[in-house]
Structures are given as C-alpha cells and as structure tokens.
Image (cartoon, rainbow, N blue to C red; front, side):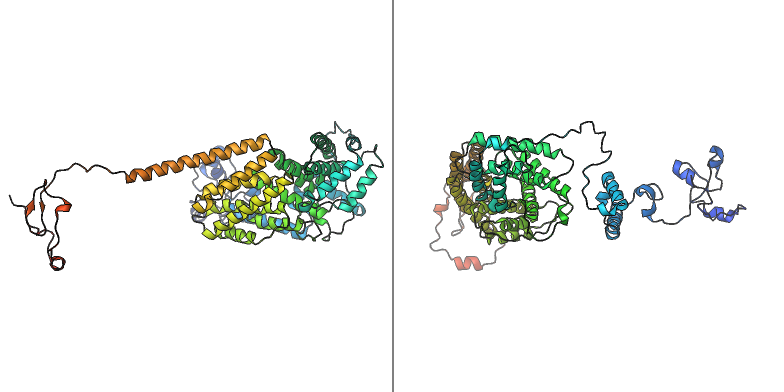
Length: 560
C-alpha cells in the first residue's frame, strides 16, 4: 500500500481544518477501496477504528496508459477506443525502434533465438532446428522417410502423369518449375531405394495427373495419395517447416478440393498457409529467378488463393501470414497464374473484415465481366466469383440494377459452356459441379422471366456432369436441385391460385335495397324495377347536369 509520502496531500501536518474541509467530498484511499463511509478527516474515523493507514490520493487526472493492467485510478477498465489507440501506438513504436514484432515478443522460443543472435552475431542467420525446453522430449525419435514411390509407379508412368498435371493444374497453380521437375524425375529413378524429401511433391503431382488424365487409374491414384499423406505426416512432425512441405500441402489441398467434403480441403489449406508462415517467406527476393523445383512467391500466392476461396465458400476464417510476398508475377507461356491472381484481387471485396458497400460489389461485377479467360478453368473461377459477388450484393442492397443482373447471368452462362467443354475431357475441376448448382440457385432467387428461361439449360448441364462423374455427391446434388425447383413451383401455384380466385364471380352482397331516383325524370323507382340497364340517357342534358351547382344534400327526397 502506498504511503502518504508517496502521494502528497494538501492536508497540512498540523491538521489545519481549512484543508480538511476541502477534502470532505473525497474519501481516503482505504475507504474508497473497501467502499466504506469516510468523514474526510485524516486519519478518518473508519481508518482509526479498523487501524488502516489513512491517506489521500492527489486529486488529478492521471494518464490511463500508466495504470497497471490497463486500469484507471478508480480501478475501472478504460474506454475500449482508448485502449485500442494505446495498443496501436505501442505496436507502431516497437516496429519503428526494433526489428522484433509483437508476435515475436510474445514467443519464448523467439526470445531465446534473439538472445542467441545477440551473443553470437555471426550465426544470427543460421536456422535453429531445436526449440529448447518446449517440452521434456519424451518422443524424440525421427521416423525415416518411406522409399516406396519408385515401387508404386514406374518412371514412364510418372512422366506421363507429369505431363497431365502440367497441362491442367499447372495452368492455374503454376508454382513448380517444370524443367527442374523433369530433371528430378530422372534423378529419382536412378536412386530408387533412397528416400527423397521431394517424394511427397512427386506423389501429389502424379495423383493429380492421374485424376485429370481422362482415363484415371483409381487404384494407382489412391496408392499415390496414401504415400503422399504418410510422408506429410512424417515430415510435418519434424522440427522445422520446409518448402517441400508447403508445396505438398498445397497439392493436397487441390486434390481434396475436388474429391472430399469442404472441411478437409479447408483445414488442409490452412495447414499449407501456416507452414508458409512458419517459413517466414517475406524476406525472399522480389524476382522469380529461382533454380529449384519450387517457385516460392508463386507457391505463396497459389496457397493464399486456395485458402481464401475455400474459406469464403465454406464460410470459415482464412489464415493471414505475417509477412506476405509481393503480388507481381511474371507471365510465362502456358501458365495463367497471373490471371488467377487478377481474379483474386477482385475477390478481396468479399473479405468479411473489410467494409464493403453495394457499389463495391457492383463495381466488382462490372470489372469481372470485362475479363476474358484464356482457359476453361478460369471461366469457372470467373463465374463462381460473379455468383459470390451477387450473393453479397443481395445481402447489402435493397434493389439491384437490371444491368448488374444481366452481367451475372451472362457470366453464369459462360461458366455452363466451360463446364460442357471440360466434361468432354473428363477434367474434374471442382467448379464443374459447383457453378451449375450455384447458378440454378441464383436464377431461382432472381425469379424473373428473363432469369428463369436459363434454368432448363443450367439443370441439363448439371445432369450432364452427373452422367460424366456418377458419384453419390452429384446424385444428392441433383436431388437437392429438383427439390428446390419443386418448392418454387409449389409457391408459384399458390400465387397463381390466389390470382385466379380474384377473378371468380361472386354473388351480390345482401343488403337492404333502397328506392332509387331516376336522374332524367326525377321519379322514384322501386327496387324491383330499377336496374342500370333501365336508365335511358338519350335525351339527358349532360352539359346542364355537370354545370349546375347542386349540393350533395339537395337531392329530391323519395315520395311516400
């Protein structure tokens, strides 16, 4: 507890009553903390009774940032906005004065590494494979990598599947250097009994190549996938992440995106991004002139696009790395990864953390419709992104312009065309089924005659996909589509029934009939003889009738 000497008080040592009167409105600190009645004396009656050390704080506003644990002088938490501003200022100060980030400052492992770098500056850039005292290390044995790849597949098969991969998947996700990869195949089959850290990449490429070959061998594909999975489990448990691991997780994300439920693809894409974050790729050079199998910057952006889009489609959180790489990619023949990155930039409007308005989403759709995809797989990505932007636009806008709807339908139909071309080649891109299904849902939501006239073609396209790839998932998808259309028809029939009911003749409502006055003759007609057809206006002076100023209360009374 603080002493009176630490907190000066205007109360004089001789007990001047004038100073005490100034303190009557303020409780001493012991009474304030214990919420007891204080008479303002020093010592006060409560402190005398309970033998507390009575003292008063100086009455002045203190800087909240100096209070321990973020508390104000009265013990209450500070305002939320002030706390955030202080934290941001602190982080900016740390970043400007030190190379250590707040995240690294939280880490005990990073703190030990920084200490080592200070004590041994010459070894500052060398990797530290061990993390001292992370745990007691009861299971430290390192498993050997399996060397079964060369027993699962021959070199000729590997080369054939490699060609399939580089002419399909690599067109959009081009993070491997093909010439170096082909050389690696030759080297690997010259040392068939020696395990290689690149085997998980070779397995992933071969599995995807088999899937997109058009004549896949399911047993070989499953064996390759299992081999890659076992290698990833072994290498991921190692002490340090590697680029081979990051590339292998990215390849596995691509495979799972088109074969399994969304959770598996999402968690795998997150693992790829976390592996990349652990590598600290932000310090890599800006150019792409790399001689290895893996192009690091392209790997970063391919993994980022996959993680972001899978997270958006699945409705989950994406992984954000601490040191992103530059987004500029050099164009290469037969490689359309820069075009994929262009679509990704448009899709950043969908980030839930970024404030976006209806005009932002409309601008994204308008920009997207001007993009001319060079390959069918990008047509699918364009269509899927257009449908996603439309869904977000409906969420924030009460009305949507006809031109925006027309653009969405145009890109949806372009996606259907690409789907039909891809199923002829038996290429199971994941949006082959997703684009027709989402387009059908969008057309049902738009619910106009112009939109519904495209519904039959979208359903036929989805049916063609199900016939090409007869899986249980597509069977369930078709059932869901038919159910949705049946529900829409039921709603339309109910609405049509209400419209028809409004046209059904109804009998006259029963009421007491009153005598009516003949406007031409002024005579009263009996209820039984009067009818609208009995009125004869042949000689009626309409001009006089409309020009006469007659009060509504001056009609002739019926004769009795």
